[in-house]
Structures are given as C-alpha cells and as structure tokens.
Amino acid sequence: MRIVSLLPAATDIVAELGLADALVGRTHECDWPPARVADVPVVTSAGFAPDALSSREISAAVGGRGEGGGTVAGASGAGEHQGSSLYALDVEALARLAPDVVLTQDLCDVCAVSYGSVTRAVRVLDGGGPRVLSLEPHTLDDVLDCLVRVGDLLGVRATALERRAELHQRLADVRELTRGLPRTRTMAIEWLDPLWPAGHWVPDQLACAGGASLLAAPGEHTSPVEWDAVRAARPDAVLLMPCGFSPERTLRETESLTSLPGWAELPAVRAGRVWVLDGPAYFNRPGPRVVRGAEVLARLLHDVPAGAPLHPDEALHLG
Image (cartoon, rainbow, N blue to C red; front, side):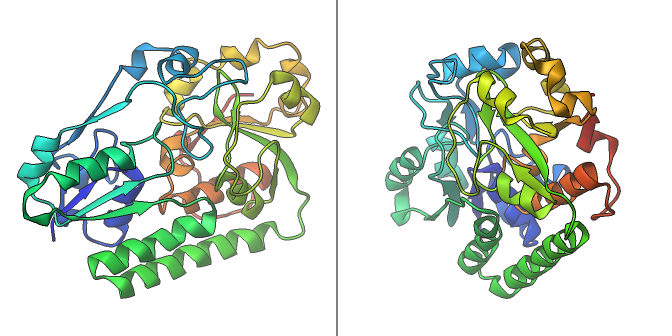
C-alpha cells in the first residue's frame, strides 16, 4: 500500500492507524508525528509566504474583504476561498510516487489542496490512477468516524474501530470530569483579523470540556464577526487558536485584539482567563488529536485532571 496524504489531518489518521511507513507523499504542512513524516516526500507548496504576512494581509491574499465581510485562512470554521490558488500540487511528483491511495478533503479550499485539483491530477495518471478518499467532517463525532472510513479503505478496519473506541472513551472521561460544573461561556477565535469564531467541531470540544461556545454552534460553517458582537457576548474565557499559527506566531499578533476598545473590560480579561493555544495541533485539523484538545480545554476551563498534565507549549496564558 502506497499512500499520499494531501491533508495534515489525514496524515495524523494514517499514523494513528499504524501505517505511517506506508506514506510515500505528503503536504508541506504535514508535521505529525515529526519523526515519522520528516523524510516523506512533499508534493505541495504554498502560493505565498504566510510567515511574512499579518493576519489581515493573509486574509487579503486569499480573497478576504475584511472587517467581517469576507473570507480568511481557516479550517474548522473557514469560509469559501475567493482568491487565487493557495496551494500548488506537483502532479509530476505525484505520478512518480505512484500511490495506491490519495487522501484529501472537500471541506475548505483555504486549508488544503482543493478536491477539484486533486481529482483533475489523478485523472491524468497512468494505470487508472489511485483511489481517492475525501474527508469532510463537521462535528467531533464526524472527525472520529473518519478513522473508520480511512481504516476501511486501507484494510485495517479492526484497528480503526479500536482506536475510535479508545478516543471516544477519552472524551467520555472528560465529560464525566466536567459533569455538573457551570458551563464556561467561551469565545474561541480561529482567526484574529478579521475576527473569526471557531466552528465545526470546536464547539463540540468546548461542550465536552465544560464550556459553552459563543457565536458558533456545533457543526457550523462560521463567518467573520464584528468586534462589537464579541464585546456584547461578554465571554468568561477567550481562546486564541488561529488556523495554521503556532502559539508563538499567534503571540506576535495579539495586539490586534488587545488594542481593541473594551478589551480590558471583557469578563475573561478581567478574570485573567485568556489563553493562546496550539490551533494546528489540537483544534484546526480534524484528526485524532482533537481529543487531546478537549482534554486541554477541560484543564484550562475547570482545572480538572483530564488526560496528561498540560505541557507548557499547549497553552500560553495571555492574561
């Protein structure tokens, strides 16, 4: 079995199923598990250098119209992509790798190579081309069900069912730890400028961890919101988890929020309950590590012993 993953979450799933050694190609953003994917050939590239741009500039580069009216780079709640192609797929490299299976997505053209680009590339390959599986989860249960969909295709259904059951049990443990506790009214932010609430599976993660998602419902494909809507919601906790940004990268742009009028008066800020989280690791990507994301949230919101103790890199206290 020769697998090419064109989605970081799919790469996580393949590793979770014990098939990392079957990966023959990946995206430039696939980075987990580091020791298993570092030497896997890369078959995609970015159309611009995000590290050199601000959130607002990235939004403009992908076709965003700004101030609550456009699109932005995101994942769990990202909107339609209106700009030029964000990712290039090396079709020649794909052909050389001769995959049996290509894993991709049709959920968001902003966070991965588009499904249309993948299917067009596969059609020109010799030998009838590989099997293509598109993953399109919207809720937390959908994310874990993807393990079984991939496991079925790769011939490891029993392993997939076992891993899904283990992950479901970890979520059940988190729910039990937070049962009966007050729901913490939480604003999870997936993009800083314009402000974009984290949707799809993130509200499910929050509910599991004893939180109540503000301005985004479970499974919802969200849109940008005005700052006044956040102020009016009066969150008791604020979580910054921009798509594709490491916590350190997010910290470089927090002033875009902290300088807004009324920031210091938010209940979350007054109570010192604002955190910068590792979005790509635990929240943006619909892979198995979203379960760890729920454990992280439970520890932050309610200080309960969910999963392993927090690592310093998993949550940076902003104030």
